[in-house]
Image (cartoon, rainbow, N blue to C red):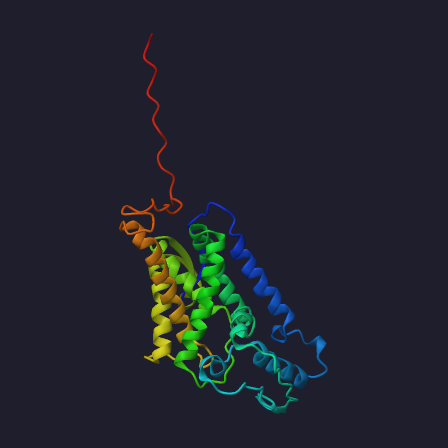
Length: 285
């Protein structure tokens, strides 16, 4: 496993959308029952019930999205380490499944889930935003989140487990970054080497991420978390890479929308500065 913390790939302008997405995710998590701040609850049981209701009220549930079944209500009994907890079920008759996908993109199941996602978005999102432009990047991010969630739902149409997190949208950002900046140097912590920071090319870091998600999804020699939607990560990553290839690859090959030659594709911000021009000496008068 690699934990990216920095990339040697400067941007030309402040990544406003990336910072806004990070701030919004953090604020929503802090205001949710999942943040771990228990002072607002009378007992551990009331907190468990609040978390359970929050998941089912705002999370994206595959059966509601594509299964065609009735609305899924929170379970009345929740299993915990201390034993089963009985909760009062309060169904929300006005829940709109398609809108829950948007809500779920800004929900996280815990601090590790939140910090991991925001770290990846912070490291890689700024450059993709810089290349696409702010408005384009915002639409790309949201559309990718929807695509990843519905992709997972189509593969698991009968699931009643709420899906939460920005992982699908962020995976699309990783796929886009891989296409745009495969040779950018990414500093990553290596847990197997006592979190030693090492620099790798982006294709190695992000390629390793994709392969690891695939192995987890297939269960091939590695054991992942049963509560993680690996297929949503794969759909998001593949869609982000494919979209960016279709957008920028077509322009480079002369099939862009502006004509046979296509517009000159903006180059990535240079990793090193070009050599300074040489000024010839003034000839003697």
